[in-house]
Image (cartoon, rainbow, N blue to C red; front, side, top):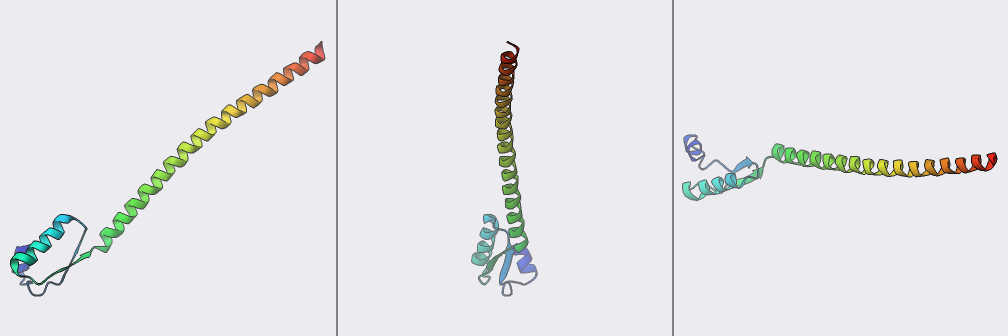
Length: 104
């Protein structure tokens, strides 16, 4: 970074750097300012990088929600199947009793 700044004679012209939030980049910018006598440089977050992080987090949240809904549906479907089986078994038992009562 120092080499590029001095090669392009930017020591007095550099006022801001667009960057991601990585600590190593911030440290490098501070070091250039302290050791090379550059004026203080503002560190601006890169909009595209920040937007990408937001989209990735939103996609992960949507995926997590999808998994929770799917799991919940599977549990509910299993419960509904059990209830339906118990109901149908009960109805079959009643029907059997009615038939037996009618025959005897």
